[in-house]
Amino acid sequence: MDDAKKIRVRFAPSPTGYVHIGSLRTALYDYLFAKKNSGDFILKIEDTDRKRYVDGSVESLIKSLSWLGINWNEGVFLNEVISEKNNSIKSKTYPTVLEIGGSGPYVQSEKLEIYKKYVDQLVRDGHAYYCFCEPERLEKMRNDLIAEKKAPMYDRYCLHNVSEKDINKNLKNNCRYTIRMKIPQGEIIEAQDLVRGKVKFNTDLIDDQILLKSDGFPTYHLANMIDDHEMGITHVIRGEEWLPSLPKHLLLYRYFGWQAPKFAHLPLLLNPDKTKLSKRQGDVAVEDYIKKGYLKEAIINFVALLGWNPGAGETQEIFSLSELVQKFELEKVHKAGAVFDLKKLNWINAEYIKKLSIDDLYAKALQFFEQKEFFKTASAEKKLPEFLKKVLAVELDRLSKLSDVGENNQFFFADNLVYEKKLLRWKEMNDADLKKTLEKSKAILKNISIENWTKEGLEETLMEATEDKRGELLWPLRVALTGAQKSPSPFEVAWVLGKTESLKRIERAIDLFD
Image 1 (tube, one colour):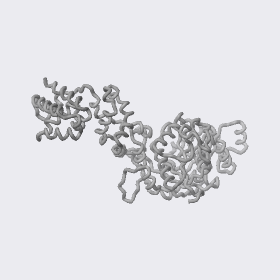
Image 2 (image 1 turned 180 degrees about the vertical axis):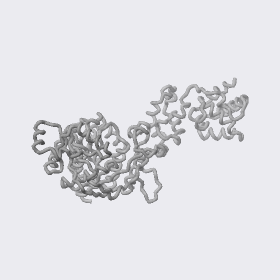
Image 3 (image 1 turned 90 degrees about the vertical axis):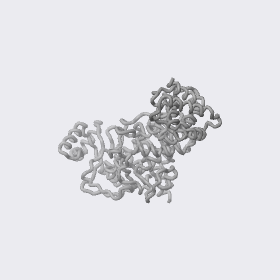
Image 4 (image 1 turned 45 degrees about the vertical axis):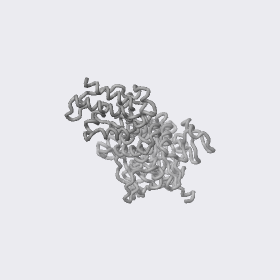
């Protein structure tokens, strides 16, 4: 593939506070598509909507994508990450950001003069016009149309009723205005979408879109088309919600005389009840899942499957990032909405947790232990790495996210278990038999050496002593060690607690019968 046809894609998020799961999917598909085809992946910032801007969100966005392993080769980077680059330029808008590459600026708020130049060209060529309508008039017009059950489209009052003389007078008097795109009437626009195939649009149903707002900032429709052209973008991958805007964008390419890129519109993300994914029904920010202890590999794996699979009857569901690059094709993205299934994410995350070594799991889980109240009040020896790694070894196959560490096994960290004596009872056992079986467990454990104090050694010894009455020995022992209705096996619990603590807890249980 020669340079003129080299694939170039871009991710253009708005700095509005967090990375939406849907935005992450777009960025991931951009990355996979570029890597698969030896292309360029660009990160630019779409910050022309200043009302929604959240301070620090650009830096947070860059850090989140970098942490997830989604890397780009051109665009905006944090200055603290990349200190020197031959063609790097300090961003005028965000002091901590460097712009790297030859087709910038990569921050839209730094390109206002460029956008103004192009929109003036559209006005001169008769493809756009000034609109001086006051917000009150537009609101009334909109409400009237809705009341008449009509689409709330602009009525072109300024196109038909404002003369060139009036325009010049208004501009001279610094009257507030917007610039609207002039949509041709009675035309059918056809396009080939890489996901949806052929799509058609009737221009009679398309509003005269505002291209330049009264504050001098361009709308998405103008800015992104200009950016994509100047950056040589060959493929635009974006959400289905932008599909109704496609004819406007294709018209802009026509008006400017530019070749349009290829478009791929990704399916909507849905809640389990098939409504559009929203904050009302759960977390939609990537940062929320990072804070809950989902591994980056699991997040990437799960998000990749939100609307795509390798097809051809393949049943593989666990993919490394390199495997996703190898298998990803836009043509295998689904048209139908993709359901965000938290159970599926938990399963995938659990599979990745199981692959971790205990040392790696400890390193990742420690911060989550430190957030727990039961951990903060635990004795010093129960905060040691050796003890925590044993807890994690027991929990390894049961964890779906790291924030759950210790949550269901708080008894490991307790100094004095509190529980009702009746919980120790196995079926119809009386107090005398319960005390007797607890004393038997104590004697057995007391005779096991420290060297043999392993899960396997404990299980082998205790199972031999059950004499086909497993529940009568193991149930009271497990409750004595945990004080819980449900818990891991007594072998695992005793191994974690150690010999001294295990015997101490059994003695406390025996004391309940005196």
